Image 1: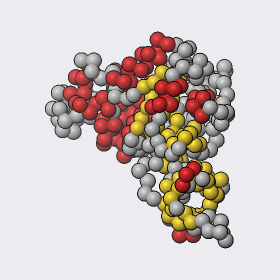
Image 2 (image 1 turned 30 degrees about the vertical axis):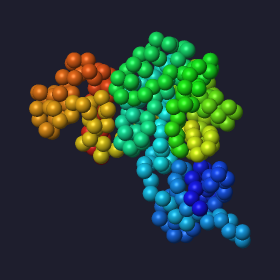
Image 3 (image 1 turned 90 degrees about the horizontal axis):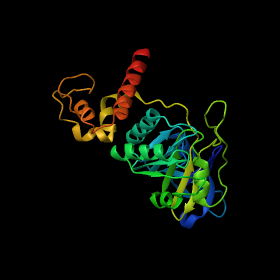
Image 4 (image 1 turned 135 degrees about the vertical axis):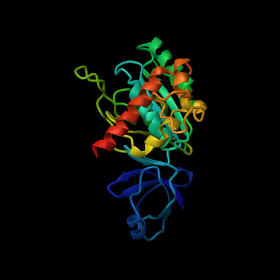
Length: 290
């Protein structure tokens, strides 16, 4: 039977099988030797009357994230807060680049706590919709925008990701209609959220639709392989690629750069371009350091 790995419990895998039935299985020797099995993996497993279910093979992955380890994400809901904690545009752009690099088919920006700063929530929404990303402003506390967010979810595997303290767990509890995920307030001393999610687990939302709250991150490293195609990973850069004077243009200080011209003309947001330069420098410095 074909099933979806929804939880890993020290080598025991919970599999969502046909018609929502679940089974607790282990992997066979050959499958085990081929590598790790991740939450989100589609597997083939056998279930007999005389023995416990066993995983016999793993289907090829469409993508994979390493923080936390999860595979086959159909939609990433990047969740930030309009305030408390204050959003970092650089971190948002970095996470979007990672999602593009990982070839996640659907990317949605969710701006939570919009009630705390409606003007900035609207500013963020305008900025990233212009960059090519669908955005939804919500308030988990006031329960505004929850139904719109729920309608925008597209699975079967959906990962909610973003900094700690932005309200991912609270949002998911509203979507699920029950207290499934633990949540804590933002620290008054540091202004940061506290991690409440400790492991990867997919939770069934409805038929063939599973969601996951990923542990919040405070830093994010991009692979050096991103450098050569970094400009393409910025959606708002794509209309101008191939129009620069030089074929190997890095869009820094080269004359005749179409991307730089688009920034000066207001077609690309300065913050997005600043993130591109910062990520490029970050990757270059890492290569030199190593």
